[in-house]
Length: 308
Image (tube, helix red, strand yellow):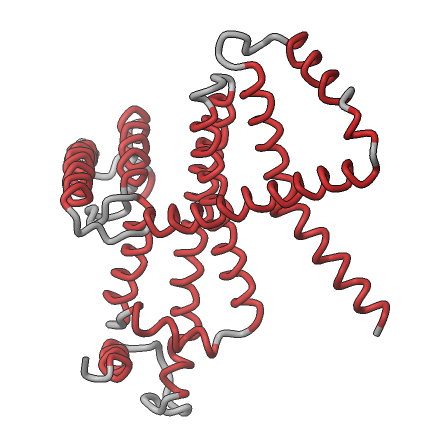
């Protein structure tokens, strides 16, 4: 039992240091440097060195108790800063996935829809330039290289806005909505009502992969929260704006990758285990063959809504 407790304690300590103390300590260090130098002396290393020498020369720091108290205070402050960032990261995550019923969100959705529609029209025009008759072996259609490159560029630009006509103010919300729409079109299921029940029957490997993708998305949101913190620090020390920009760029890239993986895993979970759920609740017999049909999907959605 003692080795087990020691192992668990070591893992908890390592996790506490990695998630709370180290990021918070880095931010506190940047804050101390920024408030000491300011905007006018942003690169004055001598000023920073002098401040550190004056601080180290104080008699109170020679006492062991005082030094330990200062270290403990710094650790607690770093942890508190990280906890605040985690709270802000959760808010950013919800903001990215918001449905967008307020006026500003509706304006953003309309703007994204106009851009998507324009690029989709250009894509259809580029596809229309492909020859109708086959010009290759066995009548295969050969797409001119310039037309193919234009189609790929337009497709990429359109999909960076949304996979379908935007209905949410952000790419993240549209990506999850696209997954829900495709599942409803394929199986007639309402993902919002189906998912909590499906989660209960998923095998452990699927649960781990989905949870890992969700955790990666949450970590990207926390990184975006650190970008906000460094942006605020830039009001006193402008080099912090570089850290803020770096955090924001990395957070955006990681969030898109993580949410794309999460949406794909959610669709895959319904594809692979949706029929199993229908069997579990008695809508499909175990001896029946075939894929999950619209009739069973509609009945599951109706059942799970409980006539609400």
